[in-house]
Image 1 (cartoon, rainbow, N blue to C red):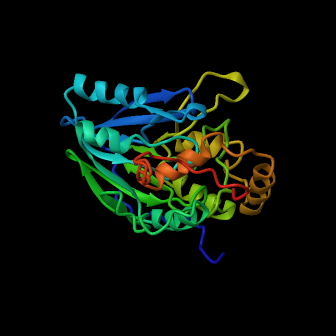
Image 2 (cartoon, rainbow, N blue to C red; image 1 turned 90 degrees about the vertical axis):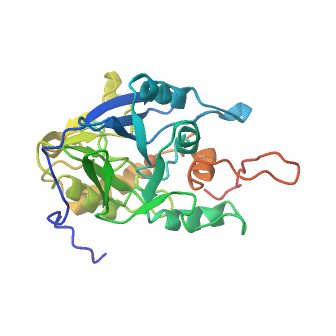
Length: 303
Ligand SMILES: [Fe+2]
């Protein structure tokens, strides 16, 4: 590792005077939080990390979670400009294409999704019809790229470690960290998936925690540690003071040792096999085979 972890965020266009209206949608099946982020000055919004429902034992897909988001958008007369994925999730399926077909929006993810497509394309032996160039998405964000949501300017920040393509999306005074951080009492997400790296995760977290203290941070997951109610919003100041894994004062080596030891004890997420196959396709199901039916694979002894 030669990357300098002294977080330098001076190049990012941070603007705390923009205060988006954030509405959270909690999916209790996967403990995922999806967001509608609305421009206070126009009907424009972005949807971040939507969820498509799956009854995996039955192989059945449905859209109740996404329909709640669509209903909110319609009820409030909003226009979706962006459907953002903070990363290729391993524990839930993205509903972005379903929402896009129903009500619009452009689908965006980190440009390094191509690395994830390459890696899992091999694991699932996806063959030549599966494009590994990110073309399933409308926009591939590079570090520092800006985009508009109505009158707001948002930007994407590379925060790899949990996966190589993880990005934090900063929209005014609100940052959507994906699985880079959990709530202070939840710590951090695992870094042991293919392409994950605990050392990189630590450096990415230092970058997020270099944002202004007052920055609101929105989590992608919460598991209610110790039985507390589900929460998803905190601040940079709170994470720096109290995160059980990476509060100020925890060194990189301490974090890497803790994260690596802990990851060895974790089981695979229940939905990793369907999630990955669908999310590397931008939320689309695999193409039908010669019978006209669609299948998900289970690679044996590969994960
Ligand atoms: Fe994740």
